[in-house]
Length: 166
Image 1 (cartoon, rainbow, N blue to C red):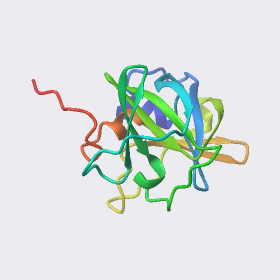
Image 2 (cartoon, one colour):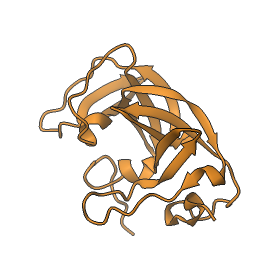
Image 3 (tube, rainbow, N blue to C red):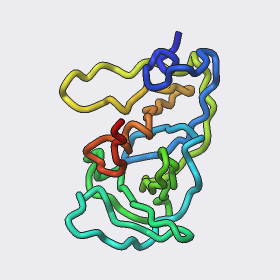
């Protein structure tokens, strides 16, 4: 049984289903997220800054009439000072009923991972919050940190989604 199938975050998905991920870079590391969450890819553009927003929220952009918050993942993951160049990409995501932009250093490709290529995420205990890491994808000599983008973007510290109360 693979890590993705065992994860409570992915309950109900078939054990033997391949996983299609968009791979992207932040610093020296490569990450992957479900391609089904991606709406589009855009170059980095000027954003409108929001007063008193956390540093990792760069601001907002108007995307065809929708105001989209832009999150810089390099700042969010504390991976040093971001640089914005021709390789910088904003991944536009559909998270629940929200559209969110995620700034990454570059986008590599779309990769299909078989269940055999996905390993469980290592236990980090309380050293850091890894609730959003669902596993490690391996392709030849590459390793991708697979993230549950829904869980990451809907976390309380992001403040992007409102918890629904019953």
